[in-house]
Amino acid sequence: QVQLVESGGGLVQAGGSLRVSCAASGETFSRYVMGWFRQAPGKEREFVASITSGGLTRYYADSVKGRFIISRDNAKNMVYLQMNSLKPEDTAVYYCAADRGTGNGYDYWGQGTQVTVSS
Image (tube, rainbow, N blue to C red):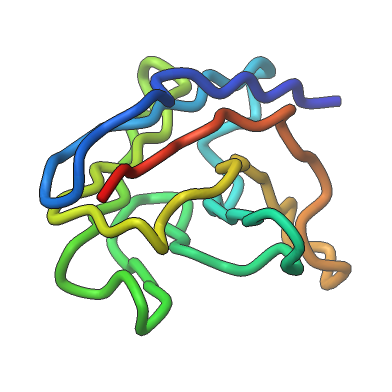
């Protein structure tokens, strides 16, 4: 079992930056693909970014490419999402998730952290 706890959300003005973090428990964290997702009010949850277990490969949604950076520190069991040039449409609850690689998608989810971008 893996527990994920997000932090770092808050209120920021458009054009600003924010970094959200995800702390993971469990000794096998370094084996998992980690991802960030978000859900805005009235919308479905959507993929934001992911990073492979060793951190060598990263994927981004087109909407955040060039503005967001996902990273991880396996020694600290941490995953980060650096968000730059934020837009009001980035307002959402951001969730951290872990994929064990079973082929069933993401297996573990955090409780989410709210990010609000004011115009």
